[in-house]
Length: 595
Image 1 (tube, rainbow, N blue to C red):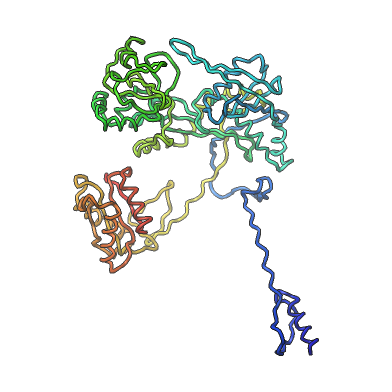
Image 2: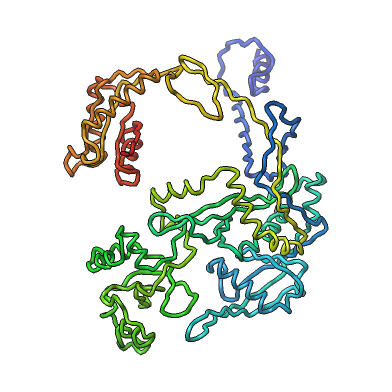
């Protein structure tokens, strides 16, 4: 009996997963409790992220066939065919500055250093042409006649009195080469390893000429223009985006239209008047006589780049603040620490220029610790300052106008891109030809297909869209919901819209909803104006009160939506309404603008 029990125990324990042979279990009192072998924990499933796998190792499915449905149509693509020499070699060099970190120097200055190096040391570079990425890598073809070399580069700043120069010690060191044969093998299917380093090097080569001729910002290049003014002392510059791409048709040069807002080059006092919403300089100057106006001035001009007109110079100064005293009371402190003439006296003696506004505060440029002040009447807004960065943002009106200017029909968009590229393509190809690269000046054409539009099913009819559009006149939704609990709040002044107007709007909204098939259960929702509440009530307090009234009218039902009427999207109420409804009250809100 004991032997039989041991056999049963071995059969039960041996499988460990409940898959052992079936046995007859006999209940026999044992001296010690039976402890089965613990079931092993399953191995953790290994999860692999596609982002951790090289693109070349991902098996992409091959395309079986091409489209056949629809009407064929000829299309122009915003790609230009590019070719390269499969036997070409691009040589790579590391660019570094002695005693300086390149990451701390603007790309514009680094590009100026490298182009000046080429101009001042042409005999040391031989017949090679170069392309600089604006940071730390230089590509050359053919190779430079050295493996490693140090250069001294002088940047001269044109001044009226003297020629100030800044010296940089540059080191170029060969770090590798890019064989275009690797790209040719990949495109012909002889290898699965995509040579991204070759494509990046070729892309830098094609960006070199636009970087010198135009205003580079990110991957876009802009040409200065004043054809498209914006409200608030700004204007829109049109430009193009470009990049080198691989496609089924081969190597393509991709280009598209780009548009951004820049500050206008205007006198600083005109800029201040525009920002403060004054019609002229005189009104703005009067407002700057008190502390409140000066505080506003400090916010407007901080971080702004300016140039000066009282002497000849290319230098751009950055405003760090404003003076505490006007030019007539601010004295210049010499190197010996002694006070000298006032700023207004200094300009009269040094430059024979009398200040028209000696009682106006000045702007401070450079480091805050250095007391360098400039009268605003001698300052101009520097060109090429893009709006939309962390320090200066577009207003709602400027954003709307920018979108209207940038939104172009396909043919007009193509024409603008082609016109800008046509002025660059000759010099671009002349430069890139030595690297074995060429871009054709004709857009690639391809065949597209116009598909038949689907039938749209409504609750009371079916309709096929025409010319890509359709309307909802006398149409009802197939499945409609019900609006049983809602409220309306106006955050506008009563001179903009009175309560009767809000009530008429609510009635019109209900009629429109019923016309589309919606069932409106609450025919008289609670309606209020923010002005009915005291100044101590915040937007959240008002929304909480009005939605509470709606819930009480609907016998405890949670409001489905609250309609908020506001004067403009830029008012502080908009952000507070969304924060309150979405995160605190947990209900949808719809903001509408008064027109």
